[in-house]
Length: 180
Image 1 (cartoon, rainbow, N blue to C red):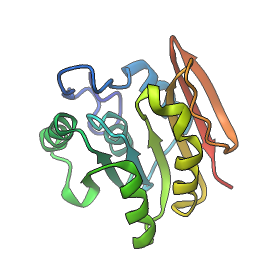
Image 2: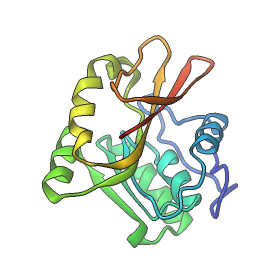
Image 3: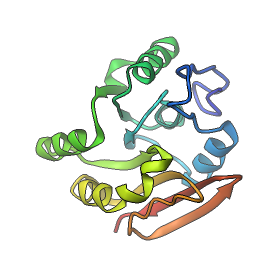
Image 4: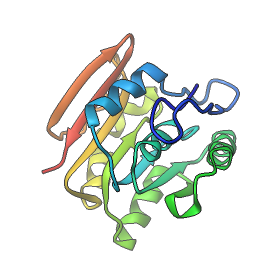
C-alpha cells in the first residue's frame, strides 16, 4: 500500500497484521481524492482510521491538519509508525486512541470543526451506525463540509446527507456527502 499522490506520493504505508483492519485500496483512494479535488488547508477528521491511509492521503494532498481516531492497538501502532516514517509534523496530525462515539463527544465539547470527514467503519457495523454518526457529526461540520463514507455495497452506511458522489469498486462502495 502506498500514498497515491502529493508530497508523500509513492511512499509505502504499513497496515496492521490480521484481518481486523482493511486498508482502502490505492485505486479507490485515487478515485476518492480525484473526486474531492483540492484540499488546501482543510481540517480533516479520519474516523475508524486504521493505518491512517485516508487521512495521510489528505495531508499529502494539502490538507492542513488531520485528526485520526482509532481504538485497535495494532492499527494505532501502524498509524503512528506511518506518520513517523513520513515525518509528518506533529502540528499537522493528531492521533486519538479510543472509540468514535467518545471522540465525537469530545470534539463537540471542545468546539472542533472539520471541513472533511473520512469514515471507514467495520463493514458489518455500518448499517446500524448511520443515524448515530450523522447526529454526532452535525455539530462538527463546517458549512460546505464533505463526508466520505467507505462501505461494503451489501451493507450500506446511510448518513441521510445529500450525496454528491456514489461509486462502486468491486464490493466497495464510496459515497461523498455534502453538508449544507
